Image (cartoon, rainbow, N blue to C red; front, side):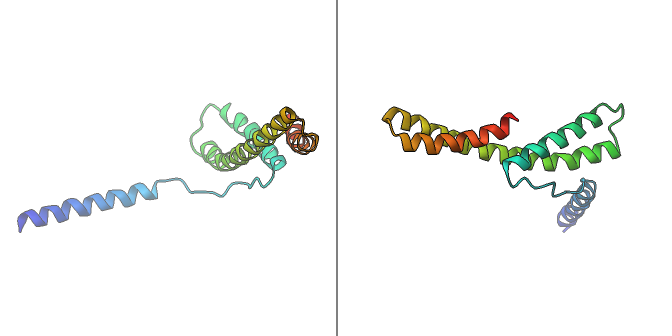
Length: 124
């Protein structure tokens, strides 16, 4: 019975430590959505610029750290959208490439234009 009581005490202490550490975790935020490649680029630029400003501060603890934490949510969403869109761009480019090998004008034009539309957004 003493062994069971000891396990109960150890278990209750462990659970109290877990609840304290969960309370110490920073809040989670949604971040700005990046529905399009344009939005993703805008969010990436604005949030990166602000992060750069914050990183120049001597002391990042407190408010600057909290703001950086919030910015990372927007940056993660922007990067995910950019990865998705560049993956689609790679597929379009490959289709244009294969079309050029086959002499398929229609295919080259269709996929080449899709690729260039997004490439222009990235290049701006």
